[in-house]
Image 1 (cartoon, rainbow, N blue to C red):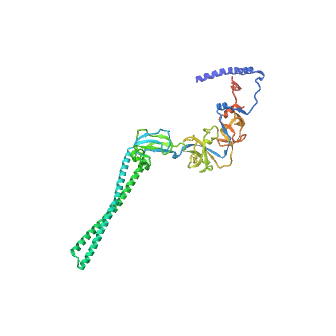
Image 2: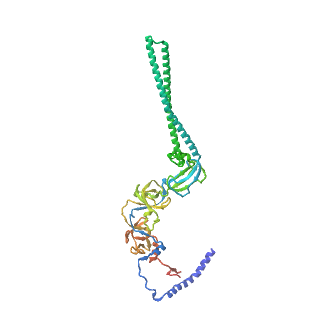
Image 3: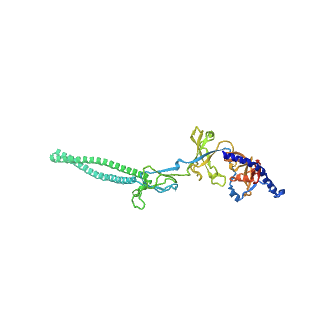
Length: 484
């Protein structure tokens, strides 16, 4: 507090001295100035400014082209990009084992690129099960193949027995007729009947055996079908485990003769199913992981959609399926403001629910089929959603609002001279409606003219008659040009 009072007293003592001597500096400058204003004739005023390449480079001047736009009916809503749900893919371990990474984070991979290798005991067990299943198929096929020869032998035996029964039946009939005529002996007829009965017994046993063979044929066929089905299921499970088609697993392994491929695979090699960028890696090489462990994930950064938050009051002007576009806050990557390369179009989708507290609604724009998002459109990047509403109005000449600067009460633009690209013409802008980014210009320009975009304020300072160039203030509050 003491220091403050001291400073105040010093200021009060020195202020009269400053007031007394300050005018002398201005008077001295007035005396030093050449008499009669002998400084030469002043150049005639002009509305043209030199903007040669050196000036454009030093001031960072860029240009925007006048273009025909529907400014009055454009609704601009800020928002951000987000990945499509299908743009992210996770790779999880299909079996427990030791993992060996083959890629690095943020590496770009194509479909089929090896991602990691898994040495899993589960795969060894699967190989053993495949071997057992193939053996079971071979045994079942051998059993099924043996039925037909047995059936053939049985048919021959049945035919012979049937022939024997027929012969003995005929013999007994003959002997009975002879005996009735008094020419056959009784013991001979009894022996013939005994032989016929024995043949019929053998024939009955053959029929029973034939039934057993028929049942056995059905059983072996069912066993063969079951063995083939089990083998097919095992191959499908193995294909899912190693990420190789079942037919490829059955095929001979390259350079291994006729040895099937499944017998030569020592470790599970997981490959990328779609192109993308390695987004997250959750394990390190050499780690033993459990089944379903999250190993890594990939994203396709160009598969994005745009989400903006609109006001409920704008709902009457928005509909599902409406055409819209997304543009950057500024013309990123463009030398002029023609942001055609920095936008993409699509179909607008209104969120199914609204926020009753904020009175807002999500607006989602998915890119149209075949539309490639600009390089800067990454998940999380901010931009603007532009929707052409259903109001009245047509296309008019427009320029970016950033091209317009104020000089006092005037709105000024600088048009590049079509006859001399190294000059810019200062002109008052005859402006119309704007949408916050583009503004209608009613006169003085033609479509395709170039208007200064970046660097307009520097040109305003250089050409303004109202902006003070420099000077100093006196203690009495008056301002004088030049330095003290």
